Length: 358
Image (cartoon, rainbow, N blue to C red):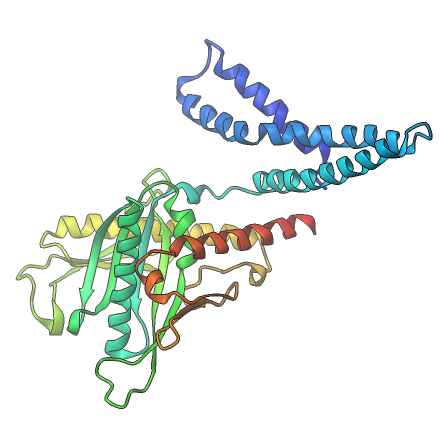
């Protein structure tokens, strides 16, 4: 049950913002912010007004039912209408509760995705490459922009690590549940006995932070430069172009050596550092708001095992919501990624709604 006062607040705020937007005295600096807030309220306004009307409508129909002068046919129709109104009210109430849930500002941001080979040697690096290809295909299908920030390859076209930015509408909200350990079970090409091996890769998804989100004091940084090296220690550059940046207050360390220019490596390193600091601060706030994080769909902790890709059985299983899709190849091609993401988002919303009702 949503307090009537909260629903009335939505309608009152919408009227106030409408008045501000139509005024000649509106502050141009705040125009975009007010317009966005007004647009968000517009989407839920009809639901708010309908919600307030249900109790009155139900009361009117119940009077008909309780009136001894009403004939049976009218009463039967009234009973059907009451059930219909109750169902509509439940749907309407859920929409309002979702709207009233605390908003995560990061959901609207672009994302930085980091994929690293975990346990399993060469097979783990090959799986890390497969995961990156999957996100590339998803990005292409959705017309997202994917740009590699840094990449470290292994033999046989595997990946030790890759960091990339993915840009588009509300990207972080769509990819944030990918953070964690992804496990693969399959027979490696090098396996002569046909045995199934298990290996893993970690994925971390961070909201891309802008300079306005995180202010970094130069005095809080220690910057070390060193010579870049390729696979097997092979020298990539004869100058000290690689950069290691340490953020002293948090202890977060970022290394960057893909570019031949020290300046470019520093720029890329600071971009990653800014997003990691932003995520670090977000996690602190979230932990303060929710002491019992185990009830959530996922903590975003990269040590949490979230998904298994089982090739012999042709399935992908998400352990957080116990969802199994027997279309592994389609999933890796990015064809049914939405089915997984929609299920994760719905589950997360249901958990948030339950927490509101406690």
